[in-house]
Image (cartoon, rainbow, N blue to C red):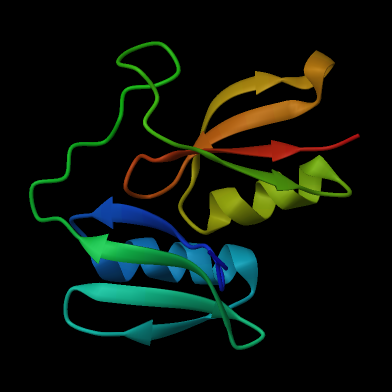
Length: 116
C-alpha cells in the first residue's frame, strides 16, 4: 500500500470559522464544499474540516480524554501565540518548562505550540 498523503480532519459546527482559523495558522487556502473544507498549503492538502452540526468540543486537558491534537513547532513562541490568539484560539495551559503551550481552536480542538 502506498499512501499518497494524510489529512487531519476536524469536526466543527461552524465550518467557516474553523477552516478559516486553520487556513490562517498554516498559511493556506480553503477549497470549500457545503459540508467539507479542504485546507491546502502550496496546493497540497494538509487539513480538513467536516461539518458536524452537533459537535461537542473535547474537555481536555483536565476533563474527558483527549480526542486528537496537533503539534505545531515554531521558532519563537511569543509571536506565534499572539497570532493564534488573534485568530480565535484560546490558551488552555502553558508548560513553558517543557517548551509547549496548549490551546483550543475555535471549535475547541486542542493543539500545541512547541519550541526548542
